[in-house]
Amino acid sequence: MPKSLRPWLAAIPLLCVATGEPNPVHLNQIGFLPEAAKRAMVADPSLAPLPWRLRDASGGEVAHGLTEVFGDDSASGEHVHRIDLGAYSKPGSGYRLIVGDKQSRPFAIDAGAYDRLQYSALNYFYQTRAGIAIEAAFAGGPIWARPAGHRPEKATCVSGKDSLGNDWPGCPYILDVTGGWYDAGDQGKYVVNGGIALWTLLDLYERQVALDRPSPFADGKAALPEAGNGINDLLDEARWEMNFFLEMQVPEGTRLRMPAGVKRDAPGLVFNEVDASGMAHHKVADEHWTGLPTPPQLDRETRYLFPPSTAATLNLAATAAQCARIWRSIDPPFAARCLGAAERAWTAAKRNPEIYAIAEFNGSGGYGDGDLSDEFYWAAAELYATTGRDEYEQALRASPHFAASPIGEPGWPHVAALGSLTLLTVRNRLPPSDKARLKAGLIAAADAWLADESRNGYAVPYAPANGYPWGSNASILNRAILLARAFDLTGKPAFRDGVVDAMDYILGRNPLDRSFVSGYGARPMEHPHHRFWAHQLDPKLPPPPPGVLSGGPNSTSLGADPIGRGMKGKCAPQMCWADHPFAFSLNEVAINWNAPLLWVSTWLAERR
Image (cartoon, rainbow, N blue to C red; front, side, top):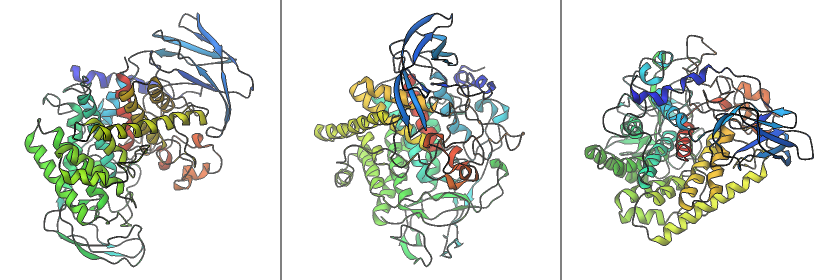
């Protein structure tokens, strides 16, 4: 077996652990890092603290104490007791925690707890590639191998009447958009959702370079067909998506009829001719939703480009600017192509600042966004970091996001934080006073999220006022990225422990006693909403490979799917989840959710 495949393939035996009964002691199911927070949670009606004991593999008591009574917790619907094991740091396996009459599963304290997960989380992107055969040698075994889906993928624009009766005129060309990553459980490919995912991989690379840290993804460390090309594996994977983005750019000299300034689709749209040169198509997707299950190579739906949008255009501008500076010394012609695309996209967005994603056709997600000020700021920041040009500095200084404090939580509709993080990471000409202000905004956000831990029983740095939204697990991990960056800048242990708390929740320290990551933990997610990883629906198809993140609890839109509808009004926010392939609002998977899992697990793997 090639050495390059061992870190990934080592995770495969974890799939053999069947989902067992829930345990009353909730903790991270893959173990604890020696030099970081170690917390466990127990639901118990007692108003008084409970005695706890920590025993090693031989049964000897190595620590003891009393629980902290948090009390009634609206997020979980439980009366919660917290146990702090942080003072004990001796590495080992077979530890058990006894709390009153309850006993945990065996667990480890291990500096290498996250070594496997970072490779599994990266491999997710290889397995979701479009336009290439997925090979058993790189996917972890023959059950995940499949022929190429959508190859070649040549598409023209969607046209005709949408669901509200608007007659879309289409476009006079066909683009070859073969490649890229499938977005989620469906097989659409979205520039907007892909943008934050692509940025996250590239930011992970840039952070390691900026801090002069050895990369765990040096050429050949991950399981990829590009192994041996001398290029960091993160960049090999990111380039697969970047190439797709470049293909989605509207040809020069193109004029299209589109509605401008309309944020929501409605009957009676007015279409005006605009110069669409350099814009990016919002997505390429099926004419109708494909049924479950449908492996990509068996998708028979017609594929269409959807109209260009300003949001997609700015996502292209931002990520292509990243590409230009990263590949400048690696592949100068590719870097030049990226920079040209980025600058054309910026010009196009400035020319067409209010073309929103509103085409209401069946078969794919909308990803509409009515506020593009953050996309303009992000793109300006990336272009400024790459070129240093006055035009981009003026644009970012004119943005309200440049002066915002604290920095907002990132997500595909809210990308201002990405621009600020880039300006703090990549060498640029901003004066120290500006960088100090951006740093202060980051630290203010991190402090606020640590304060959220006191507002919920499970000590998660996340306490949304209106319930847990769709994709809540990604929101938590995106916060963890900013907490990690705050630790990088300050060395404050509380920020490191906030990252640990976020990942502990994802990996089992939650009231469901579930790991939301496939193949990891005693009770991992097993049945995602996915058209190929659909073993529950068709035994000939595989389960998810290790390292796939579920979207997680969703208490705000439970009416979206049949499983969620049955839970509406019956679950506390952290309990609104089901491991079921039809629960797409709860258990879908997505590139922009796995990207922060990769980023955070890699950061935690550095904590040796």
